[in-house]
Length: 137
Image (cartoon, rainbow, N blue to C red; front, side, top):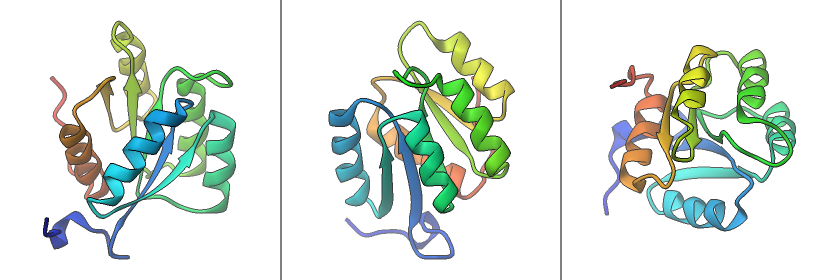
């Protein structure tokens, strides 16, 4: 599948940080994203995500709301202090849309309900990387 130039940042590929404690989900997601020209760094906990962000910058982060070690909203608040301009897409389970909307209030770019459609997630990541305002319904 050809890659479109407008899907890439100035460095050539979108640098994505995924923070989610479901290792199998993250592994599958990372492989599928890589095939679509997105460089993925994975963190399997909120604290690991914070450590990774301290060492580098990312175009976009996909952040799970419910993790064992830290609440996704707390991680979001820390990320926004560390890199206020980095778009963060929240992932939430069914029934947690209220918490996801709380994330929007704290500066999240957008949110999706898990399990989410891969193509929809990739479209949101690409829009976020280009700083296209999200369409909130």
